[in-house]
Image (tube, rainbow, N blue to C red; front, top):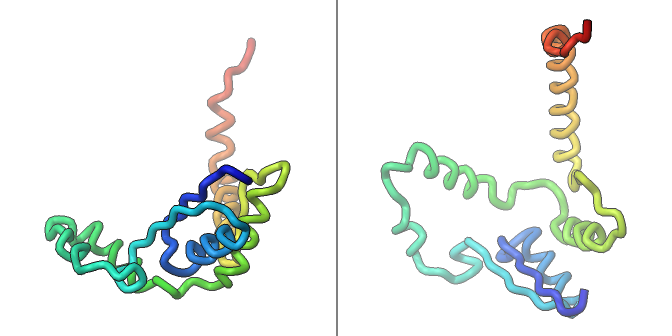
Length: 132
């Protein structure tokens, strides 16, 4: 990957930090950003940017992100290594599930889709064009 530059967002902690470390260890060029005040030593300007009109929508999302931060399962260093491995494979994956919780969510969604397709199969088939 000589000559390429990695742009890594969320590099202040967790997976982003591990990807940045792994890329730097491989002598890659890295541009890294992060949003956490403590990790990036930012001022309280982010708090000043909050708009009261959005408190019920974006504000809830922001609070949820803060509450869930650092609560995800899995090892960020192992995930970074897996992503680096995926970045270098000859035939890229169309989809990847890189934690067991992600795999479980995909399985649940697929099961829902199968149930829904079965429930509405006759309606779906009724829309086919029938040649006389």
